[in-house]
View 1 (cartoon, rainbow, N blue to C red):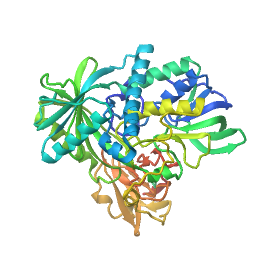
View 2: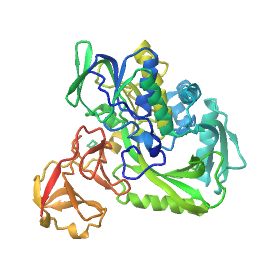
View 3: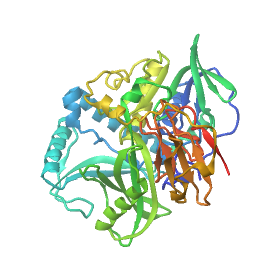
View 4: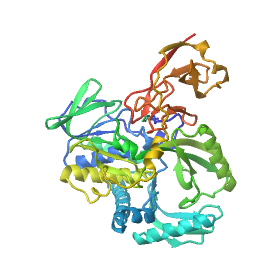
Amino acid sequence: MKNRDGFSTSLWQESLKTEAPATTPGSGPFDVIIIGAGITGMTTALLLLQSGKKCLILEAHNVGFGTTSGTTAHLNTVIDTPYADLISKFGKQNAILVARGAAEAIAIIKGHVDQYHIDCDFAYKDGYLFSQNERERKQLDKIQEGLEAVGIPAAQSATIPVPLPFDKAIRFGAQAQFHPVKYLSALLQQYIAAGGSIKEHTAAGSIKSEGAFQKVHAGQVEYRATDIIYATHIPPGINLLHFRCAPYRSYVLALELANDQYPDGLAYDLQEPYHYFRTATQAGKPLLLVGGNDHKTGHEPHADHVFSELEAYARKYYDVRAVAYRWSSQYYEPADGLPYIGHLPGGGEHQFVATGYSGNGMIFGTLAARILCDLIVSGDSPYAGLLSPSRIKPVAGFSRFVKENADVLKHFVADRIKQESLTELSALAKGEGRIVLYEEEKIALYKDEQGKLYALHPVCPHAGCIVQWNSAERSWDCPCHGARYTVTGEMLNGPASEGLRLIVLDE
Ligand code: FES
């Protein structure tokens, strides 16, 4: 089983069979270095390779380590941001372009499935959105109007595929679902077979432009390429995009049912936070995926309780025999409702980025691959202007929204302290982490199942916010821009570029 950026095991995680080759690809020059091997990086690299570009992927952990192993892999043209909102913010033609882009992403995935005979449980499904009260009904009416305006037929439906009460429902066809890691695994195989280079467990460090090249330091090597792509979910460093994207956590359960009530379709309610349903199969047996209960990263003090709430919600409507898997994952909510795909702000002509996918990572990750490939190969894309990371759209209240996450700490405690001086230790349960006070300074403290303590400086090295304990994934999460760390301080995901400093606890 491959690792992912969390303590819990996702349904998909065990399926990544293809090993990236351990061979050293040499330092270049390459045409393009792609940093990150999730859906965005892997698809972009394959498309670029097919366009004749010499590519290297640098992955800090293993292929699929990030959100691609934690997604629920819905393939929607009906994206999270309602088209009615997009029409009012960006105009009807641009909203239509987004709808076309989402359909194009599904077509790219289906094209790969057919071309490479990928066994990844790809299936077209109808999608259903339903309201449960007057307020939601009005919202649904608006969503339906928006869908019709961008050319996505959405008829009222008298039934929904899940046993929940509803007062109105709409149905829309040509949505899909798949197994994201089996798909990723197949793309990796194709990429390697076509001569692509990849280095796992190789974190990209500093990047500088010199002459005709972008130079990337990773380990002891300086790799060179004409173009660089950050396919890291959120780019590292301090960038405008960290003030345009807010990190969120989302939760999911994979359930075995005691009867055969598995829904045929994708269903979404309109609660806040919302819930969704799809099915999957594992070893020939069906599972029901129920997800939702999203919250801002680092803003839920009892993340493990979210699983209990989600389970109670599912048990209200389904006869659940067992919870086979439960896991959570991260996504970035963009300020104006659309992702940022194109040139990295402040990065010049040869650095590219894709981020802010909201809950539509498989769709926008795939569309990003098409856009970035076109920008690099031909210098243009029909989506370039609309999704430009440097676009300036009015985002009322969003800066405050990002800033209010911040709790910046300027002082640093010592690197070595006596365990007995931590007064709150006795209250810490096994498996629990907490920010505790030591001589009026904060420490991130975790007690493992054997009672061993791990202490860390809680100051996120990205921009100085204080990390918060995530009990669902046993990680330290930064509430500001979403960097996450293990209990021993190693970085799980950016935008930080180093881990948390360990404090030695003397007996
Ligand atoms: Fe920006 Fe932590 S991720 S301060």
